[in-house]
Amino acid sequence: MITKLTTLEQFIIDKQGDFPFATGELSSLLRDLSLAAKIVNREVNKAGLVDILGDLSTCNVQGEQQKKLDVFANEHFIKALSSGGECCLVASEELDDPIYINNEVSKSAKYLVCIDPLDGSSNVDVNVSVGTIFSIYRRTKSEGPITLDEVLQKGTEQVAAGYFIYGSSTMMVYTTGKGVNGFTLDPSIGEFCLSYPKMRFPEQGRIYSINEGNYLRFPQSVKEYIKYCQQNDKDTDRPYTSRYIGSMVADIHRNLLKGGIFLYPATLSHPKGKLRLVYECNPIAFIVEQAGGIATNGKKRILDISPSELHQRVPFFAGSKDMVNKLSEFIEKHQYVNEFVE
Ligand code: AHM
Ligand code: MG
Image 1 (cartoon, rainbow, N blue to C red):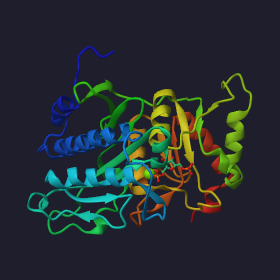
Image 2: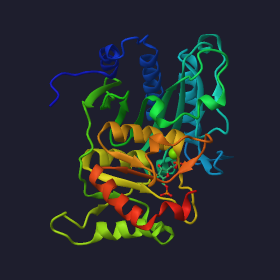
Image 3: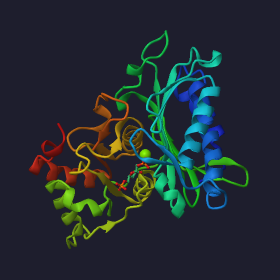
Image 4: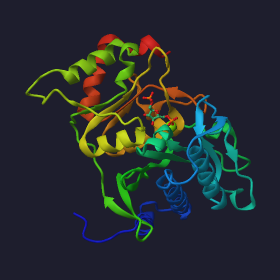
């Protein structure tokens, strides 16, 4: 029960004390991100009104066609992060290579940010929720220009991570490793206000989220787990419910509130999985774990994977503890990981 209005700004200031040597730079970064999100939110909300919809003729580095709003979001997040002076590099799903920020204020910045500026963007033109995912790391070297290897850190090294969801309301959900808190944007005052303090994944859920259209291309273990979800069983309250939006942020957010599992396995067409480790799975995994859930590629904890390249893909399973553990039983039985993942 929330009795007093706490803005994101106030919350960040209050929490700065959790980090004894905090200089306020991380707090500024989070504020920069929230400002960019407000701008993106404004554009997403008027997407049906203005001529911003439709495909741009460019493709992103994954060879997928970009929507104009992807480009818009990418530009605005980079702009916000470049001008604050706390961030020296931005790596984005939309860009082949990271942006090295070399201006006067960012020269000695100690943070780098990885983002998916508009996740699920194909949903924008049908009025379905989309999101932004971000991940913040500290530089591994104390001086000299930042290098690419500093971006390829394990998820365990994240200093903060979170997402914005542009849905029926707009929210920011983030963690700095001390639990997860959710803030809803109040459009009348233009502020994110604490609405979901100390978010926890229900240990057992009843929702499974997967693109079942790919069923025939799934590994046997995942097929069997889906059948398990669909079977009748009073004790475990099955069959479970299937819900898949196709925007990971929205699927994860719903499951975080209600309990559930999100699955994007390796498939015959995406033998390494579809989702990206560095700027999609790692930040979501950090949130999931901080909220008491599990995030795995089926073989190991997502946060323990050493990235070998910026746009690396991984199979991704995340959600309520009991559900992910159950899935793991099927995976172990079939040694699924050996089917698709080296
Ligand atoms: P995107 O970052 O290009 O939008 O792709 C990521 C999205 C996730 O949000 C979502 O879970 C998944 O792709 C949906 O993929 P599919 O259409 O194959 O189910
Ligand atoms: Mg994405």
